[in-house]
Amino acid sequence: MRSWARFVGWAATAALLAVGTVDGAGGGPGLFLLPAGVVILALLLRTQVWPEVLGGVAGVGVLCLLVAYFNRHTAPCPSGACAGVAPGPWLISGAVLVACGFATFIVFRGRASTV
Image (cartoon, rainbow, N blue to C red; front, side, top):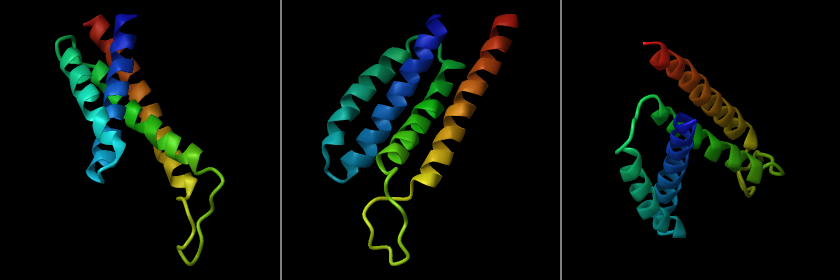
């Protein structure tokens, strides 16, 4: 069960670092998430890293799914003057990233326990 906790920890770390970097680059409040992400990263690097680091892929995928969810009522406009973004590409990329993160973790976790 500890490997699943580390997987979730890597997912949370990737999400914190991604939001902190993207939002913090524009001077937003996400900049304050970077120190938390760095602290969690330092703690996770002291434990087993592979294959739990694949949680980072799932964490970024969850962020994509959140962007899709928050923009679920928007539609792209031909003029490009509409507020929001089209949720479809975010939904697809988020689902693919989450599925790939979980699937590869399960496959490599199974291989690691049999070797």
